[in-house]
Amino acid sequence: MTTYTKVADLTIDELTLLIQNVVKQTIMDLLGDPDVGLELQDAIKTRLQRSLASVQSGQKTIPAQDVAAKLGLEW
Image (tube, rainbow, N blue to C red):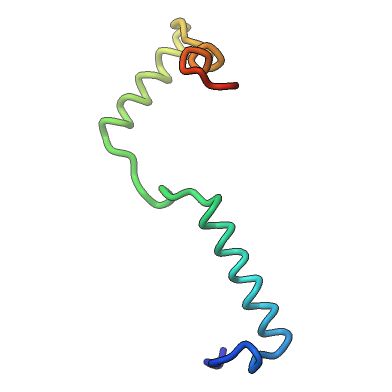
């Protein structure tokens, strides 16, 4: 794409593409995963594996609704 100094220098197609790219980037900034591409620390992996194993073995868990209620959150 050619470098322009004014929006008035853009064609309709170029302006449309520019707007689409700005909107896409803004949506990604707002809704995208800020941790994408990052790796979990070993301690967190271990903790998650233990948690999953306890659930799979039938160990009692606390329902999310109960945790939310204790924290004063709406679920």
